[in-house]
Amino acid sequence: MKITISLAQMDIAFGEPTKNFAQIEPYIKQAAAAHADIVVFPEMWNTGYDLTRFSAIADPDGQQTRQLLSGLAKKYQLIIHGGSVAIAQNGAFFNTTYIYGPDGKLMTTYQKVHLFGLMKEDQYLAAGHEEDHFAIKGINATSVICYDIRFPEWLRTLSLDDSRVIFVPAEWPTSRIPQFRRLLAARAIENQSFVVAVNRVGNDPDNPFGGHSGVYNPMGDELVTLDDQPQLKTIQIETSETDDARGFMPVFADRRPELYR
Ligand SMILES: O=C(O)CCC(=O)C(=O)O
Image (tube, rainbow, N blue to C red; front, side, top):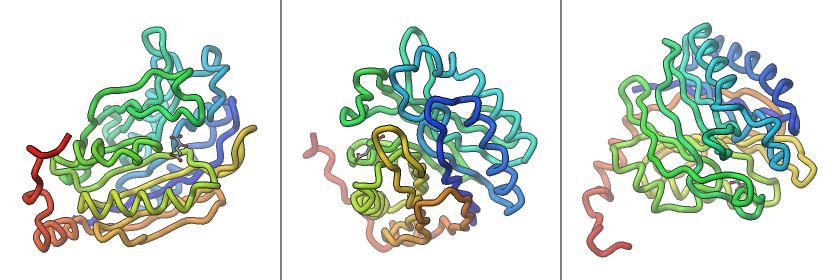
């Protein structure tokens, strides 16, 4: 199956959700003009890492985000992978993904499982604990967030549901972009899946963020890698390449889960 994917590599206005909510429609419009099946945004694009102000700026129950993404998915007739946003829910804050289909209905949600202590997420956010699965044109897909890619056991767990595409919204600092690219390639190779990563660009008061959003095939090749400027890039993948990889080398069948912990 051919799937057309648009990577919306955006800058994020620090702590200014109103500005950020206004930013996303032009990317979606451009993706629709490129006939994308799905457009993907980066991590926590509503607020950036303005963690100390979450009580004022995190989206209550994700309501504003959900309404906006649902309406835009329907208007432009494509799947919107909403990267992630900071939301307030049940007295805590979560780093949350919403994915909407062209019918305007929620396909799945995800909350970041591994909180990133280096950027103080563990002090301000609560961790998610659930898998997420959805399908694009009948092809199974799953999604994680940024630091989660350092935990191969988690991406393997998600991939066991016959997932063929792993989405990775990120807010990954420039200094570790080489690691970002190697980790994404490794997760693609070991799970014999496509990996689609969208990182932000620009700066916050603590870090520059390096972009280099990319799409990796099941061999770990970078099919496309962006630079560090805001842009939308559209690429088509052929998901039968995951069948070829899994048929040639049956890694999933050769697993020995009884030995693992
Ligand atoms: O793992 C890393 O080096 C970066 C992770 C990160 O920036 C995040 O999870 O937001």
